[in-house]
Amino acid sequence: MKHKIIMVSIIAVTSLGLTSVQAEETRFYIGANYGNSEIDTGVSGLTGTATLDEKDHGLKIYAGYDINKIVSVEGHYVNLGEATLKGNNGDQFTYEGTAYQFTANSVNVSLEGKSIGLSALVKLPVSEMINPFFKAGIHNWDAKSSISSSAGNASLDDDGTDMFYGIGMNVAVNKSLSVRGEFERFDFDGDDVDYLSFGMVYKF
Image 1 (tube, one colour):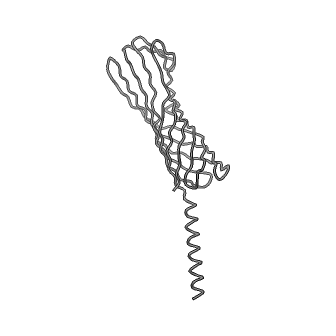
Image 2 (cartoon, one colour; image 1 turned 90 degrees about the vertical axis):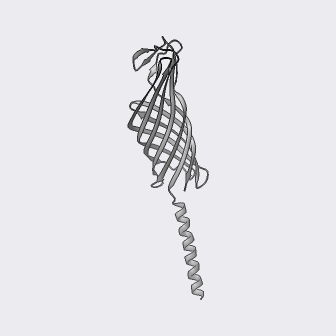
Image 3 (cartoon, rainbow, N blue to C red; image 1 turned 135 degrees about the horizontal axis):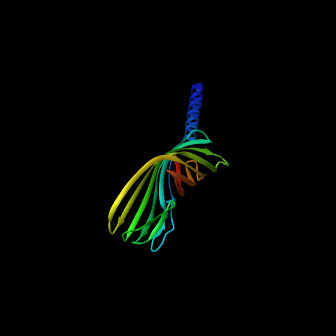
């Protein structure tokens, strides 16, 4: 009877130990970031009442898997906000070296960018709490242009696949929750979109 009690105790302790190890080895995580984006439109040389705003706010959600303590894979969806160009009849602007002129009043041109991508993260575990990382990957982007003016409205969609990269840092709050800050640069067919964001990461 005594031997049975000892064996049951050993099995119970071992089971608890295995459960604990399994919990510590949980490698899946999800997260959400919010931050500032800047879209390189290639527009310059504004005249008259023309204005250009290339900055906006963006929201990103993502999920990943820690292959080990150094390498992770991560997928994301991010809305990078929009850039806007406004002007009136007679105003001019330059786009990639060519000068253009508005021929209508109350012209509003907006460019919105979105991205779905997959990347590899390489981490540098400085301590149990602090993990700087570098990331690089490929993303499928979608750019939507909308034009409204006194002469009418129009829209144009474009998409493609390009590279993106970034740097950041995770700071652990506890075993499950971390705070993340990162800077990313997305290539949209030769045009750069920069995204500086902060958010929370949850491991489960």
